[in-house]
Length: 143
Figure 1 (cartoon, rainbow, N blue to C red):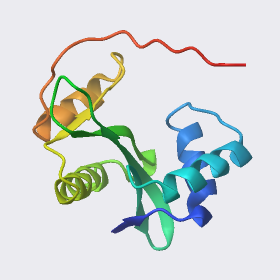
Figure 2: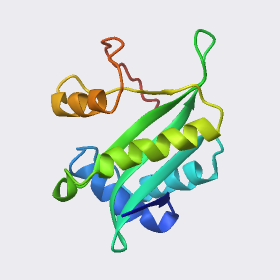
Figure 3: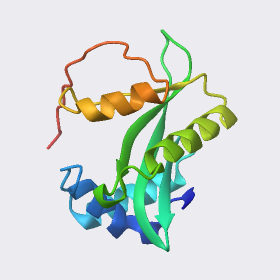
């Protein structure tokens, strides 16, 4: 397995991972537009995990800077194709993200995980992440 920065050509695989297992259906053309933006952004990074030329997972990070805490990198997504679970891909993705975050002067990493994702919580805790608080997520989309 190799981990590399995402390329625009990876969008179909990324979009498929977003749809299943993540249940985030989003039109491919819109996802492609978002990926174009992310690839050009100095404060966002998306790495893909590749086995035999096939994208089997990805991790997305974004800078998290506020006036009440240190500069962190925020993991927005960590997805591994279910057929490849248990092969160390998630762990390797986290390690890769942590190295990139340190190289970009972050003091650490934060992430949010849905309350129902108990297996993911165990995984993150096993990787040294600490549960900080429970939250409710709000969203308002503009027309």
